Length: 220
Image (cartoon, rainbow, N blue to C red; front, side):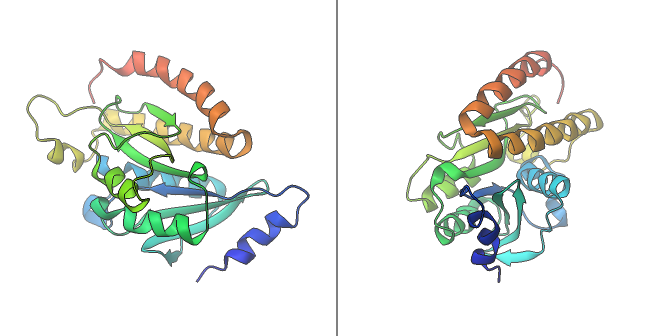
């Protein structure tokens, strides 16, 4: 089991104490769901872990877990293995275990309200019908004051069942957009850790707004 004292010692021995961040990616475990729209939260965690050289090789609070640093700030990464609709059974206990304020918890999730490949960083909000977010909010005792990185997947075409759409893999064009978006996500998360949520979101969301305008009428 991960020893949080070891994780934080490097931080707390420095001249400035840095509050850790918990990054939680939502998705479903297993090869059946790998690469589907509903698993973009997992993909965002994996992209960040790979970029920062963080090993995701620990099981903790029903999640695949890893830890590292951005500068002197500890970063805790988690992919709940509870299946999407019970994600909060992992995210809630993780936040409690590390005694983190909710303004240092950020959840990554897919979002049909944004075009495919468009991201949005926000400091709080409701669940928007997303069952993973519903579970996280429920397990945080109804508190919605945690940040989210919303990853756009677009809306189902025609009369397609939204559930089928979520569990479908991306076509080639959408996959290319998502891969670009994941790298943009990595960069804004590093900025978030160093500059804080408010400043990071202001700059990033402005950039993504123009991307939204370009992509909103294109196929997903």
